[in-house]
Image (cartoon, rainbow, N blue to C red; front, side, top):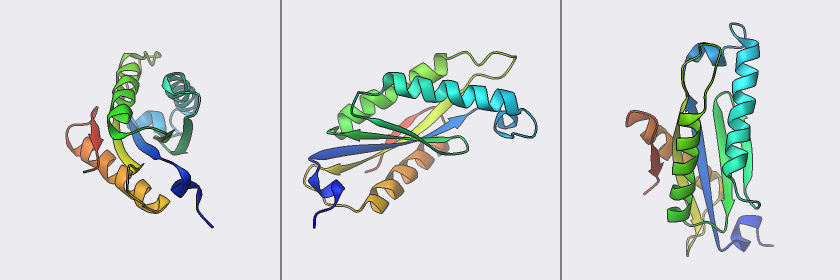
Amino acid sequence: MRTFLSLLVALALCACNITGNKAIWTEEEMPAASDRVLAEIAETLQARARETDVVARIGGDEFALVLPGCDAAEARDLASQVAAAIRKHPTGDGLPDMSVSIGIATFGEGRRLSSETVLARADAAMYAAKEDGRDSVHTFA
């Protein structure tokens, strides 16, 4: 039996880490602001996604974008649009502006990888983006 991922021609996974004031993510300190900002970020991600894409909150300040039929170059273009939209999005209430570090990994294009490997590669690329000064996009090489 073939797995779902093996049926796809190409797929890109973007791991997104939202950066800003850590107090926003500490629900005890700012629960209303945290909920509002996370909902607005999810809406921003969904607005940039294609009809076939999946946007998911992984937890805390991390989101994932699953991009079926998308190669690395297309994923990078979409990720750059997402980063620009989040950077421009006003947080209000005197909160600092948000930015995002995005890591991209691809599946398909002649490669057969497990979903765990694709996720680990996207996560590694996201951490490379964070180490590079945040607010950037990296593709796993």
